[in-house]
Length: 449
Image 1 (spheres, one colour):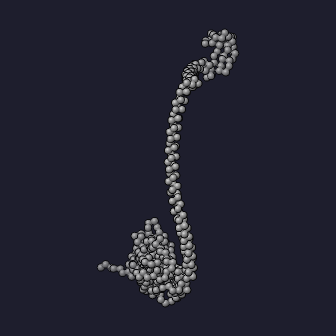
Image 2 (cartoon, rainbow, N blue to C red):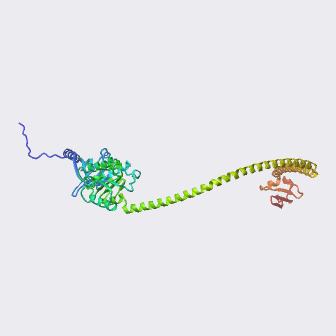
Image 3 (tube, rainbow, N blue to C red):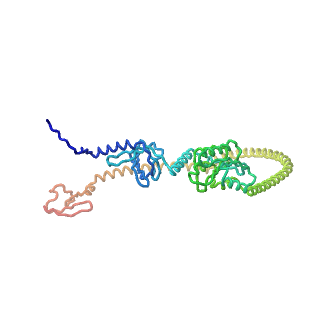
């Protein structure tokens, strides 16, 4: 019977690094899939592959994050350093480093950063549509008598506006549309007020007002619905929201932005004193213009009385002047005709006299003689030039054939004592004298052998 050995030692499982990383990745992926993580983004780096890498951190920890290209291009909110966000994704392990990371699928801004980002996005959108363009801004009436106000019926804002308007120009007609300016339902309330005044056509200008506050407090006037209601209004709109340093979307869309509600009341109309002073100026200018017009009219009437008599006299003188002009024209024509006949007779007599004048005949003969002499001289000069050309050609040819030209190339002419050119040794025996001619002179020599 075979004996079986039993071992009570634990079975040891040994993993490779890759096996362990793979198992951890599966466990984390199953446990942490589709989770939301809040924190602040830092170290954003966009790779050439289109993937985006960054770190999500809070006061105590940090988490490596990666957003692959297929998710990054569809993100409505792109990662930015310092942005507080909520990320949705799954935990994964980057096996080559043994590091766990969050695979990001979406990004949502949160807190104040979210409001500021929403503000910038809506601002860019409406600006691209042309709602902020200066060309669409309407000019406010100079002297509005009917003013609509959209604001809260309680609080200091409406009291300030009414007090300033009453001080500057008492007697104006004001209508207040009571509206919520903060919190739930405020956007719809403000839009109803603007639409009411726009549809009624009663006011000449509308003031949309609210006191100061934080970005969250003023957010009603950063909503797209309020901006589009202001843009669609049939009457000019003044935006008077917050303090001087506060800016809202409503400020950019409105026809005029006032730094405060009280400033809006001052900007909407001048003081009564200023209006009366301007009316006095207009009255003075109108009086001066009327006086000037009357003076011009009186002078014109006076001139018309004299002008009638002068016109009658001018017409009578004109008719007589016309007769004188006609007689003068006829007289000139007769004198011109007689002068023409006399000139023609003189020209015929002068022509006959010129034919009999010997000086003119001699002058003609002399001209013909000079012409003939000039032709002869031209022929002679041409012949001389032709012969000179031929002579120059022959001279050049002779020069080329001259033996002297050969001397210029280093040759010499040898002559014996009798002047005969030496062509053979017998022409100059030993002991006789010879003359050697070169290019620049001659040499005397004696034959030695």
